[in-house]
Amino acid sequence: MKRSTRFQQRSLFALGGLGLLIGVAFVLVQFRATLIFTVFLYYASRPIYRKLESVSTPSYFSEYSLPYRRQILAVTTISVFLLPFLLLFTYTLVLVVPAVQQFIGQNDLASEYLSAIQSADSGGLPEPITGLQISDLLDMSPEEIVTVLNAPSVRTWIEQTLGTLISSIGVFADVGIQAFLLLTGTYYLLTDGPRLSRWLFDHFDESGVVESYAIAVDDELSSILFGNILNALVTGIIGIVVFSAYNSISPAAVQVPFAPLVGALTGAGSLIPVVGMKIVYFPVGAILAVGAVASGQATAIGYVLLFLILAFVVVDTIPDFLIRPYVSGNRTHVGLLMFAYILGPIVFGAYGIFLGPILLVLVAQFFRTVAPYVATGEPPDQSKLYEY
Figure 1 (cartoon, rainbow, N blue to C red):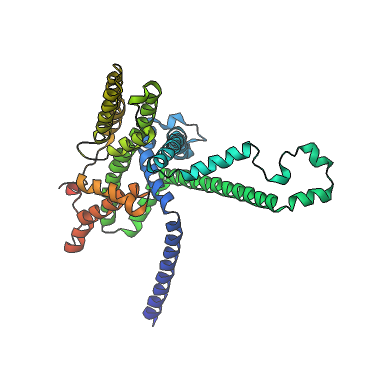
Figure 2: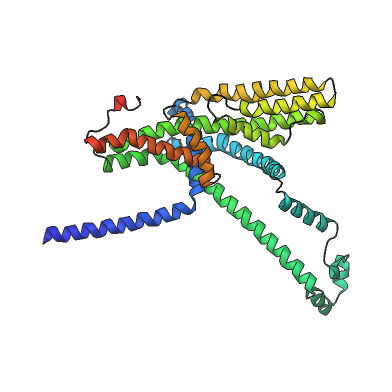
């Protein structure tokens, strides 16, 4: 009876724990995009955090700050690296989104918004309050004010204005919450991630298979998320700046069309094996050369050569030279990785560019480390873990 009672209690506890996990998973799914981007920021900032950790000996800290060493290093990493990167990335989106809308001909919403602002600036107010000054309102009786406010056009204008204001506040609040979750999530992953994983391995991984799987996944994600994707983002930002600056000095006949969009596509092109971003700026250079010949300007060809030199040296070579040495992986097949970059955004949306490679790594490493253990019962050999 005692064994039966204990089994029933354990079953109830197991069901309760399963219910809690389902509840937590339901909450996390609602913030899936934020969580995926947090994972990317963690892997993007972890090399900087570890570099600071290796060069900052305990002598750098006072006896009061030494217990908070990890926290101080995490805050320094976020402040010096992540915040400037996020601000630059946000500014890049501000430049790219209008260019994309203009390119696909879906800038009607922006046009309506600008028209609304211009009409408001030019006195586009409802008829009863057009031209009213503060002194006029002070001279009006309460009954006259109520009459003006009850006019249908005025009430409609007030409702629209309040609706726009509330929507704007909601957007800013949502952005603030997402930014807070991103930064705090990255902070706690940097400071407590290793301790949490160590606790899980010590208590729930007697065979060592889960730890082997986690190590393999972690190492490959470090390569992909920090190396490849960060390289693409930095290259895209540099491309936008360089191509926009080129347009500011070049004649109209040889200017880069939709420069922010072309810069962003250049960064995305760096994810393509072998040819890389040349698949973007070589055709653009050919288009500029045709424009230079058609314009009949002798100096136009020189600007086309300038564009190609800037694209090859500043956008293509320098970022690859600075970031590529940190890429230590390449255990995931490049063809599969390319499909993950392409299919991820198509299936999951914008955050799929991170989620696609993450899912690919999880599946690939599962079949390399866990599946053999399931089939044979033998734990994976750590010395052969990364061999093909």
